[in-house]
Length: 117
Image 1 (cartoon, rainbow, N blue to C red):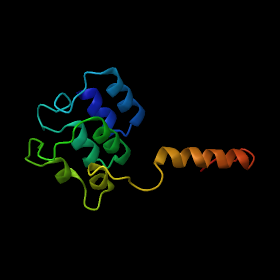
Image 2: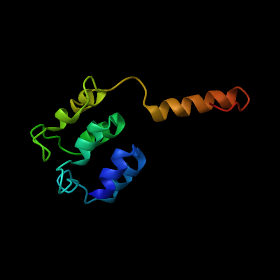
Image 3: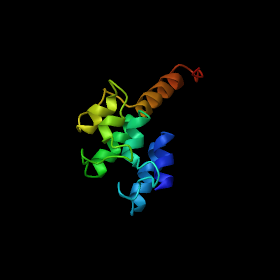
Image 4: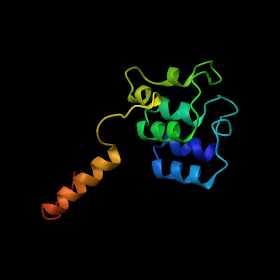
């Protein structure tokens, strides 16, 4: 639970995927005993769109699941957050941050190894 929530909060998508692959991770198991925040609540609260998408694709999303403050997952999303779109299972944007970084690094290599600022 704690490892999953920390990986989510810090935007560590690959670590989240590794924790899921190891098994034994559920939304209920990721719930903080004090705040009631699950990994999915945290992903939305901190605007982690890629992680929100991964969690929704992996676990059954229950819109009625609430935290210790009575907020459902969508209620923790900042206004106009792309996480709300991800919760509906829709594709957010055309490219993820990870894909954009990889594309920028390929372009820099093609331009003679220029460093990105």
